Image 1 (cartoon, each protein chain N blue to C red):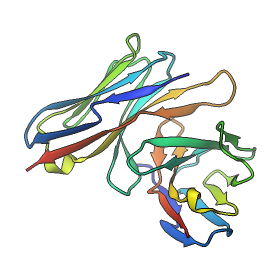
Image 2 (cartoon, rainbow over the protein chains, first blue to last red):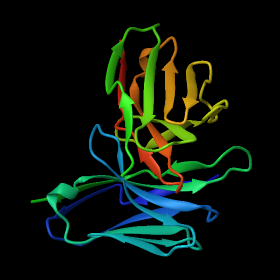
Image 3 (spheres, chains in turn orange, yellow):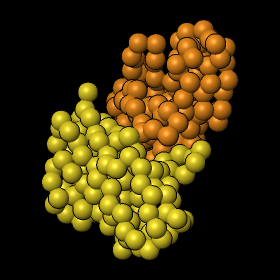
Image 4 (cartoon, chains in turn red, brown):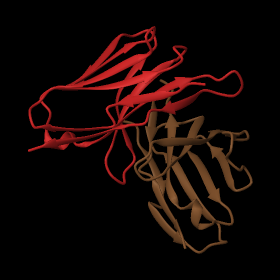
Length: 115
Length: 114
């Protein structure tokens, strides 16, 4: 059974720091991995999507890497800002032995960037 | 980017009544939509996968007779919580799958059952 874990569960950093969020998954048979941001009481915003054949994706100050063999992905945020404060979720796309494709979400990292 | 809407954004209902939540993909067609449930400070739990024109696939432990899902068109899926109870109070989020297999999420619906 695929399990997705995110470390740390919560993180508080001063503005301007570069930081790394970690996502681990137990089964390397994934089709893609997606990073999301969720603001309190809101839906999810897609940040980066990495296909299983890719190693990394970049968007602005965000860079996500994927190492399928070790079951890990990292989200790197450069020069953090207070507006980056949110919960960050990773999700892997899998295909169970029975049924259609689905996504398994990680436990989330609550980030707070202090001004 | 792709936009997914949900309606209503919040709803309060009395115990025993039914509530319908709509999920629409506004600028793309989605043959597959997902329904999730999220408890406070927890991650998303997949409830069911909704495929246009066919029956939804429910995750283990989710009562299909209580959470009715209908995906009648390529842009609309509905979740109906039947005979709601206070323990059904939660944040319900839908997502739609694009052709590039990227998920786009709705803003969520907060359901409170009194």
